[in-house]
Image (cartoon, rainbow, N blue to C red; front, side, top):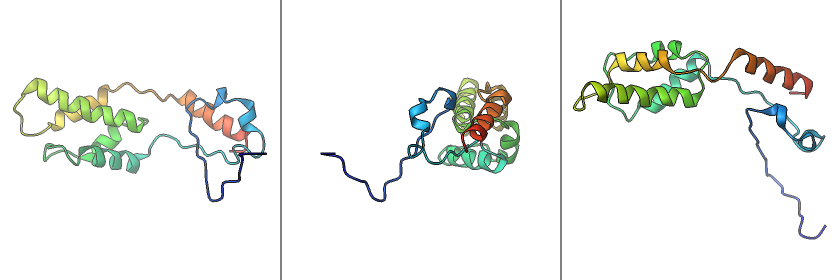
Length: 134
Protein backbone atom coordinates (compact mmCIF):
# COMPACT_ATOMS: atom_id res chain seq x y z
CA UNK A 1 0.00 0.00 0.00
CA UNK A 2 1.15 3.53 -0.70
CA UNK A 3 2.31 5.45 2.35
CA UNK A 4 2.48 2.39 4.57
CA UNK A 5 5.88 1.13 5.52
CA UNK A 6 7.06 -1.42 8.01
CA UNK A 7 8.39 0.04 11.24
CA UNK A 8 11.46 -1.89 12.30
CA UNK A 9 12.38 -1.89 15.98
CA UNK A 10 9.13 -0.26 17.09
CA UNK A 11 7.16 -1.74 19.95
CA UNK A 12 3.68 -0.54 20.74
CA UNK A 13 2.50 -0.83 24.33
CA UNK A 14 -1.14 -0.29 25.25
CA UNK A 15 -2.67 -0.17 28.71
CA UNK A 16 -6.22 -0.25 29.98
CA UNK A 17 -8.10 -0.85 33.17
CA UNK A 18 -11.12 -1.99 31.12
CA UNK A 19 -9.92 -4.89 28.95
CA UNK A 20 -13.49 -6.17 28.79
CA UNK A 21 -14.48 -3.30 26.48
CA UNK A 22 -11.59 -3.61 24.01
CA UNK A 23 -12.70 -3.80 20.40
CA UNK A 24 -12.47 -7.41 19.26
CA UNK A 25 -10.43 -6.24 16.23
CA UNK A 26 -7.57 -5.42 18.61
CA UNK A 27 -7.59 -8.96 19.92
CA UNK A 28 -7.08 -10.62 16.53
CA UNK A 29 -3.74 -12.36 15.91
CA UNK A 30 -1.02 -9.94 14.87
CA UNK A 31 -2.54 -6.93 16.63
CA UNK A 32 -1.84 -7.13 20.33
CA UNK A 33 0.45 -10.14 20.41
CA UNK A 34 1.09 -10.34 24.13
CA UNK A 35 -1.17 -9.62 27.07
CA UNK A 36 0.48 -8.83 30.38
CA UNK A 37 -1.46 -8.27 33.57
CA UNK A 38 0.15 -5.71 35.84
CA UNK A 39 -1.55 -5.74 39.21
CA UNK A 40 -1.39 -3.25 42.05
CA UNK A 41 2.08 -2.70 43.48
CA UNK A 42 3.31 -5.15 46.10
CA UNK A 43 4.77 -4.13 49.47
CA UNK A 44 8.20 -3.30 48.00
CA UNK A 45 6.62 -1.44 45.09
CA UNK A 46 4.44 0.66 47.39
CA UNK A 47 7.46 1.51 49.54
CA UNK A 48 9.37 2.57 46.41
CA UNK A 49 6.46 4.76 45.31
CA UNK A 50 6.36 6.42 48.74
CA UNK A 51 10.14 6.93 48.60
CA UNK A 52 9.87 8.57 45.17
CA UNK A 53 6.83 10.69 46.09
CA UNK A 54 8.38 11.94 49.37
CA UNK A 55 12.00 12.46 48.34
CA UNK A 56 11.48 16.20 47.77
CA UNK A 57 9.13 16.63 50.73
CA UNK A 58 10.21 17.56 54.21
CA UNK A 59 8.84 14.64 56.18
CA UNK A 60 8.74 13.64 59.82
CA UNK A 61 12.04 11.96 60.76
CA UNK A 62 9.91 9.26 62.43
CA UNK A 63 8.14 8.41 59.15
CA UNK A 64 8.42 4.69 58.40
CA UNK A 65 7.81 3.90 54.73
CA UNK A 66 7.40 0.21 55.56
CA UNK A 67 4.42 1.05 57.76
CA UNK A 68 2.90 3.21 55.02
CA UNK A 69 3.41 0.42 52.50
CA UNK A 70 1.57 -1.98 54.82
CA UNK A 71 -1.28 0.49 55.38
CA UNK A 72 -1.79 0.94 51.63
CA UNK A 73 -2.10 -2.70 50.59
CA UNK A 74 -4.22 -2.87 47.43
CA UNK A 75 -3.66 0.79 46.53
CA UNK A 76 -2.60 1.91 43.08
CA UNK A 77 0.33 4.23 42.49
CA UNK A 78 -2.11 7.11 41.99
CA UNK A 79 -3.75 6.38 45.33
CA UNK A 80 -0.35 6.39 47.03
CA UNK A 81 0.41 9.76 45.42
CA UNK A 82 -2.92 11.00 46.82
CA UNK A 83 -1.91 9.76 50.28
CA UNK A 84 1.19 11.97 50.10
CA UNK A 85 -0.84 15.00 48.97
CA UNK A 86 -3.51 14.45 51.61
CA UNK A 87 -0.87 14.07 54.33
CA UNK A 88 0.69 17.39 53.35
CA UNK A 89 -2.73 19.05 53.38
CA UNK A 90 -3.47 17.49 56.76
CA UNK A 91 -0.29 18.93 58.23
CA UNK A 92 -1.04 22.35 56.71
CA UNK A 93 -4.49 22.31 58.35
CA UNK A 94 -2.76 21.64 61.67
CA UNK A 95 0.06 24.17 61.26
CA UNK A 96 0.73 26.25 58.13
CA UNK A 97 4.27 26.83 59.37
CA UNK A 98 5.11 23.19 60.13
CA UNK A 99 8.69 22.29 59.28
CA UNK A 100 7.70 18.87 57.92
CA UNK A 101 4.74 16.67 57.03
CA UNK A 102 3.77 14.76 60.14
CA UNK A 103 3.94 10.97 60.35
CA UNK A 104 0.46 10.92 61.88
CA UNK A 105 -0.94 12.75 58.85
CA UNK A 106 0.65 10.22 56.48
CA UNK A 107 -0.79 7.35 58.48
CA UNK A 108 -4.25 8.94 58.68
CA UNK A 109 -4.24 9.64 54.94
CA UNK A 110 -3.16 6.05 54.24
CA UNK A 111 -6.01 4.67 56.33
CA UNK A 112 -8.61 7.01 54.81
CA UNK A 113 -7.78 6.83 51.09
CA UNK A 114 -10.65 5.19 49.20
CA UNK A 115 -9.52 2.00 47.46
CA UNK A 116 -10.47 1.97 43.79
CA UNK A 117 -9.19 -1.53 43.01
CA UNK A 118 -11.54 -4.26 44.19
CA UNK A 119 -10.95 -8.00 44.46
CA UNK A 120 -13.66 -8.44 41.83
CA UNK A 121 -11.72 -6.23 39.41
CA UNK A 122 -8.54 -8.21 39.90
CA UNK A 123 -10.40 -11.48 39.40
CA UNK A 124 -11.96 -10.17 36.18
CA UNK A 125 -8.54 -9.05 34.86
CA UNK A 126 -7.05 -12.45 35.59
CA UNK A 127 -9.99 -14.21 33.95
CA UNK A 128 -9.70 -11.97 30.88
CA UNK A 129 -6.00 -12.78 30.63
CA UNK A 130 -6.65 -16.52 30.86
CA UNK A 131 -9.32 -16.33 28.17
CA UNK A 132 -7.14 -14.25 25.86
CA UNK A 133 -3.75 -15.89 26.21
CA UNK A 134 -2.37 -13.49 28.80
